[in-house]
Image (tube, rainbow, N blue to C red; front, side):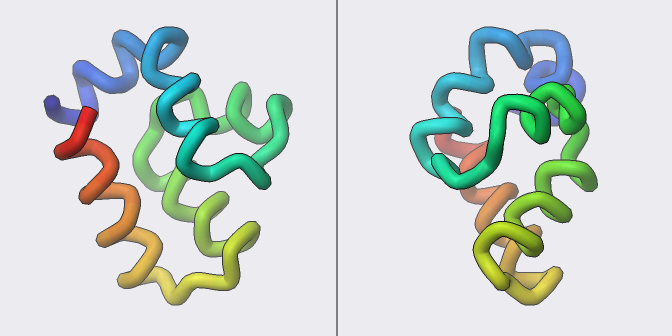
Amino acid sequence: MNWDQIKGNWKQLKGKAQAKWGDITDDEWHQAEGRREELVGLVQTKYGRAKDEAEREVDDWMRSV
């Protein structure tokens, strides 16, 4: 799945993302709206990841959905 598909199906996929990154709030999920850079930033902030580590984690999640 690519990011255009994720953005288009965000309402359905958000639940899977919430299961993986439970510390991200509903308001933050709404703000991200399936945008990769927003999600990477949230993972960085909430979980203290370096940018490259957060990007890798988000991309691994994307490939698994």
